[in-house]
Length: 388
Image 1: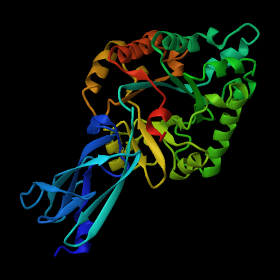
Image 2: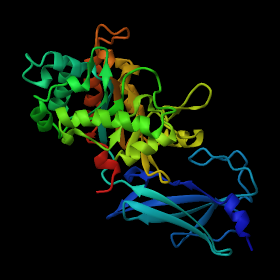
Image 3: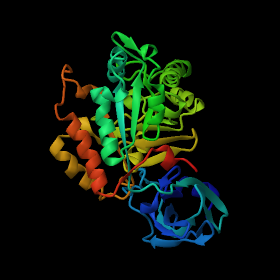
């Protein structure tokens, strides 16, 4: 009989893994259910049931090669393993998948999420924003509408032409201006456009880099509350969102926990490895988890109750002529193309900025035009990743 102590060491889920957020591209929709294949590693001659369904051994060679890796990038090298598979159905938003080895009665479970209506959607997000508000405030005696600001008008045009939904992440201050100076005279107009606009916390200011990498709970809480209170004052609570992007996409675990206690449910980042193979723009997550999220639209840290969402394209880092080819290629990957996250930074819009991009407007409209032409509909992440 297989020993429980050995089972704990060698049986692991391959796909899905704990925290995976699944959409229709991850399986087959059967009525109100999503039918998926579950794969796991277990010692040879195991008798496995997954949610009560007998699992078949699909690679029974007496052991998997040491170099075998699962979807999360974990390598298995202890003992002999076979791959087992069973087809099960997910019916709700939150789903427990339990594997039972019948001969030893050993059990292991993971929790995954089934996102409905999470395919063929896109969102446009804007980072490092403050200058457009400084302009609106400075011209409040002249502007009758916030959309007289040329930067914000780009996004109003994108919305009017394509229905685009836009999420703007804000700094609190820049040289000569902070959010307390933003007049509330446009509050009704902000509210009137809350169906497609969002404003949320990003950072206190642009510099220093990675301001929350070692931040305490109280430090990020102070900045979050400062920005959020000002948004409510000049734009309205309707513009807020439980999803945001922290400046540089880096936080300590303590800072991420602070954001979670303040109602932030999801954090957006790059989830890549740098030249030293260390996580970058990946908050507090380790290398293996970062690599896993990089191959998916979203993943949830079940322990911390935080959802992580991956940027798919950074428009200011992509040449105008490469936007269509990049997105065409991305569309081929079912695990990354359910909902597209398009990002651009504010500063590249301005001619006085050292890295000014004169085709900024064209990049934005090209990306959302591609989304429209390819059957993608505008959406906010809260309407996709959260339980309804």
